[in-house]
Structures are given as C-alpha cells and as structure tokens.
Length: 406
Image 1 (tube, rainbow, N blue to C red):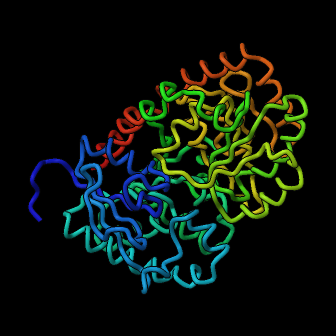
Image 2: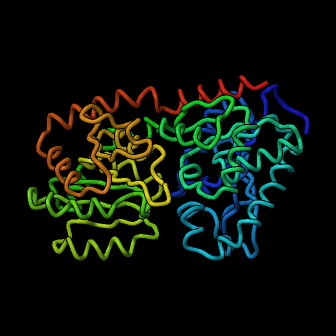
Image 3: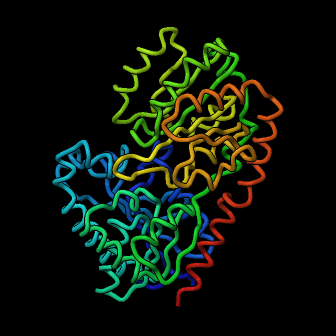
C-alpha cells in the first residue's frame, strides 16, 4: 500500500482495548494511540468481541479486530476482566488460547504487509510481545514491547519465562509502567534498552470541575468513600470492607461506594451482608468511562486496597489513583506493586500495609478527621502527577522511543 505521508507506520497490538464508544474497558491503549497519532500513522489490532465491529476508525485511528473462535459469542479469552482472570474461571477460555495465538499471528503478518508497517508496538509481553518476536523473525520488523505488570508477575511456568526472555532480549525497546514492574522484567531477562514510561490520565476529563454534591444527596451521607476497580482478588476489596465497621462506628454518616464487577462479587457481597447490617456499603456495578468522572469528583476519599496474590499478581501502577487525584480527591493505597510510584506516604496520599483492615480504618479515620491534611495531600498529589502522568508528556516520551529506532 502506497504511503500518503512520510510518517512511519506503527502497528499497536493489545488484548485490552475499547470495543465500542463509551465502553467500560480501560481506554489507556487508545489514549496513548491518540498521542502517537500526532507523529505516526497508528493502526491497532485487538481481539474481536461479540457485537464489536471487525473494522472501524476510532478517534482517527484504524482499528482491526480479529476473530479467534466460532461462533463469536463463545470467544472467552479477552475482555470482561482480562486474560488471566478469564483463564482461571473458564475452561473454554483455556481451550481457546492456541486459536487466539494463531489467529492473532496471522492477523499481525497480514497487517504488516497491508498497512506497510515499520514498527510493532506490543502491549503485554505474553502473548502480544512474543507474537511480535515471531513476526520479527519472519519479517525483520522491529518491535517495542510494553509490560503492564499482569504479564510479568504471574510468570511461574518455565516455558512462558523462556518465551518472555526471548521476547525481551530481541526487542528494540521495552517500556514498563512502574519502577516495580521494571525490577520484575529485569528478573526475567536483561533487555538492551528499558525505561519506565507509565500509562497516564486525561487531566481535562477527570477534573475537579466535575465536583457536585449529588452523591451525598443521593446516598444521604456526609462522607463518601469510593472504590473503583475489578472485583477480583488482587484489588483487595475484602480488606476495605472489613475496615469499614470501625470507620462507621467513628463516623456514622459515612458510606462506601463500590464501582466495578468481577469474579469475587458474590463473595464480597456475602461478606458485606455479614459486616454491614446498616447497609453503609453500596455496590453500584460496572460503569462506563463516561460516567466515572462525576463519581470521582463528588467523593471525599478514594481507597485502593490492592494486594499481592499467591500467584504473584499485583497492581502494576494503579491508574484509578491517577483518576482520583486528577478529580481532586485524596487517596489511600497499599504498599504493593507500582502504587508507591504515585503515593508517597504523608506527601501525596496515605500508604498502608496490604491485607490490614486495622491500618486501613485508621488511615480513613485520620483523613476524614483532618480537613487540612486532605487538602495538603490532594494538592501535593496533583502537582506530582500533572507532569509525570499526563498523556501529552507520556506521548512525547513514547514518540522519542519510536523515533530512536532505525
């Protein structure tokens, strides 16, 4: 295909990507692509999902979606929680892994030729990074791999470790989303070039201007605590639920709002039923990215009680913290994964040890009690993220990486 401009063509491969407008799937890959589009022609390849279009233009970016199982309604590997969670709970998903791999590789090779691709940008080491490595061996196309943590921490299987090591060794560059993920990647295998470039937050979209009292009016509460995330083990919500009785004893007119869905939902609701007879903890279900800003901005405190699971899975960065800070509310997090890159204890938020309801309740009570502290932490946090985590600057850093590749 003849080129219309002198811009280089980048093929972005990812298994987490919006399926349609205002989807609840995390949009960070799309947001990065929008920044890269300023300097490159960006083409995206993502897995298909029922009711999603096989091809569309989203935000001026070509999106191709490959089918990997038939009928399409039975495609179970991607979306709705991510590959790792889907593999844990679905035998059908596990059966489909070879099909996903084969059809993605075929699609990559087809698009390399059709779109005259110069560089592949693979999000997640396995499977996208490995498939970029295979494509590199077949076509000599260079690739950059971005690790998001979920593809690094659970790598216990020796075969997958070897695949990851080969992928990293042969990449032109590896980016990671936090200093913690960088250490984990280096433990797999030293890469020629590696750098911490996080995913970001849209400071105009998540903004204090969205603030209103609608949550306090609707839920008849003086203090609103917010949790946003997948209802899955690594998010640690059970420890926040266990912390809430002590918080409510101190501040009766407090409510915890939980936004998200996931495999642990029934278990968490049963725990809530046992510990929260006054119904101060409210599950709101999944929300689109369009709905989230007003919920963040109208809350008082955001809490992300993430943990490290037995398999090693943990929070690579914690984009929800960035969204909360950008929305003008102070944050409380746990000292795991990449969260300390964002939260500096008593400077940009409060950090507590994981799996510790007592410490969580103390931190929440401390923050509710001290308005001056809340304002200080929120101000410092915003100053911290506005340069490091805004998409414009992140886009420039990725652009520099791609332009450095011959």
